[in-house]
Amino acid sequence: MSDYCPVLWPEEPTPDHLNNCSDCGLDKHGSRMVWGEGNPNAPIMILLDNPGAREDREGNPFVCGTRQTLQKAADHVGLTMEDLYVTWILKRKPIRAYDKEHVRQICMNHLGQLLKVKQPKLIICMGNVAVQSFFNDKDAEVKGAKGQGSSNQWFFDCSWLSSTGSAAPPEPLVCFC
Ligand code: SF4
Image (cartoon, rainbow, N blue to C red; front, side):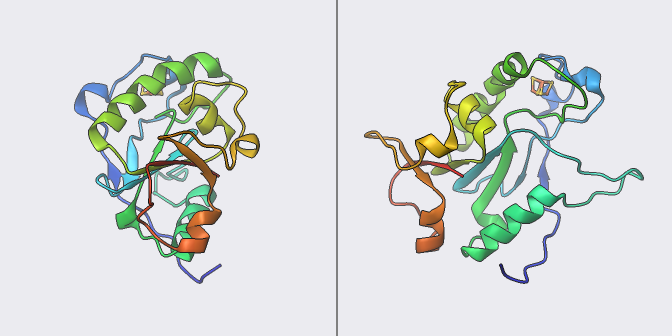
């Protein structure tokens, strides 16, 4: 891994009309909405399960371990923040137990709207939760999906990124990591 030093990426503000969204009930957990970060017009969308901690106890922003790893991996394959937009299945961090299936299904409506607007050239689903929610298949697994494809959706693991180092995929892709 490089000696790249992770930095705070700018957050894309939550649309005004969704700032107080309470559709799924996670608003009662007290965590704030996090819509996305990175370049809002990036060709590559990274999809994770839910935002982690973004501020410390004093309220100071910091880059959590997950985002550090992601940024270092991106740097390793020659990608910068300009290439990437990061968002989540859930737009709030759950604090306690919740009905995962139900909440994910509700919040996927927001992702659907977001995809229509952004139309990324490549979506990278990171982890089983992102894959299962994105494909509405609770049995889908990253491990089993690698290398599968259909005429307009190809499923790869991210090794192609390492091998090409390219930010311009040859086909519309859905990539599992
Ligand atoms: S997680 Fe999604 S559905 Fe739930 S309150 Fe946030 S935006 Fe609304």
